[in-house]
Amino acid sequence: MPVAPSSALPDAAWPPAPLRRRLLSFVYEGVLLFGVVMVAGFVYGTSTGQRHALHGMHGLQAFVFLILGVYFVGFWTREGQTLPMRTWHIRLVDRAGKPPGLARASVRYLLCWVWFLPALAAVRQFEIHTGGPVSMALLAGVMAYALLAFLSRDRQFLHDRLCGTRLVDVRPTRKASVIAPGA
Image 1: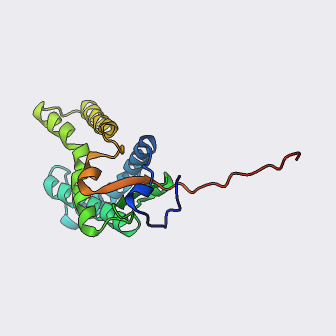
Image 2: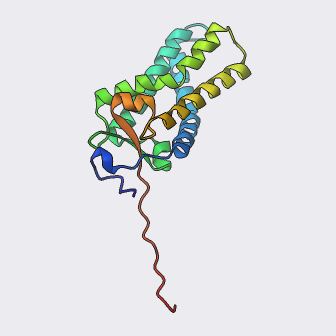
Image 3: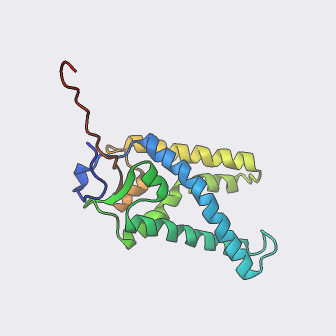
């Protein structure tokens, strides 16, 4: 039974968020992060005088990695939710049922890259450079990683199990309307 999102409950009291809603939140997060990455790229390019995308590419990647870390860790430690997580009524909690602390959220951010690293390593190993095959490899890797949640008893992702966090369902409870007999 979902509970009000503001209350802190012990770990066992929170129902896990359904995988479908977690993946939909993941897609929404990607759409939102497109704008974040574009602004970060603009700020980096303007401040460094970058004129070509391949010049200073590693600096840009490091800057975007840092900006994404600030975005996720900031939201996770403050409320346990990013905007897409709030939209889909999902919250990140630790074992005590509270938003994770700075260290736990930072480790989770680093471990979240496990979603992408196997596919990126395969793309590099096979020297794939075109958009379509790279996108398909990333999609296949993400789907395979998401399906691994079915191997866990509580349906949590590997990085959450390693960090001691959970994605939980915080949909507000709805009072059932009772129709009086004979009405």
